[in-house]
Length: 331
Image (cartoon, rainbow, N blue to C red):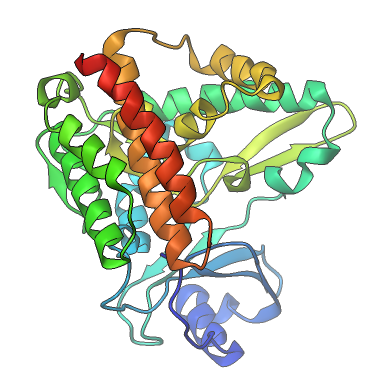
């Protein structure tokens, strides 16, 4: 699920990309690699006499690329206009080049958003600043989720589906196939998949596709701050954005799995002050558990693929718990 090993781009190639994107104004003053991403190669480019820009370069096409990592940059490019409700926070695409004329990889330039990654400064924030940021985050996610689409699934060139249940079954089946290919022994995942197949009508109560960021957490939020206040100034890396049930968005999953931890209660409350009240009915609980299994299953595949020796055992434990919870709903 991460980049296959490949040679990084050279300064000469970066210079050629800048000339294509900015013409005579594309002379480079500085190149700084941005570390921390798991898919793209990313650089902050200082242009002579101009503003800094971000250059993101997709990995090469490989036949063994994990199914959910295929054409991420192209998917982001096509879904970008649908983030209009938070356009002031999103990096603007200055150039997207999918021709492979300069390098055999997709790349795009975006404007640079000044600030710090929230994940890098979490320990430096006051409680007041942190809770304010979580409330702001809730409002931003609510704005995204208010945007509706025409079909469920993934932006072009990803697959789209007429029904939400079709997306869930497709994801569960692909995750199961990946587990089998890796020889992972997680029988609870098959049990959960079988249960999901009995819940078509419940899943299809979600009849309006909503815009989901797909990878939103503190590492993809840019913060500006002073001694008193902190504000979210940027929402980045929307390459995993898709259309579906807001409850299935990555950030809601991460908050859900922390809801029993006392140190997260104030944070979760602050988020929902911005986002809105949490539903607490039977259908919501079933969908939450199915989405939780989906995310845990996918994360376990990522872990095993990338050498996490505890990923399979952890998945077995967590998915067994979910299977037991779902069994109570079918009783």
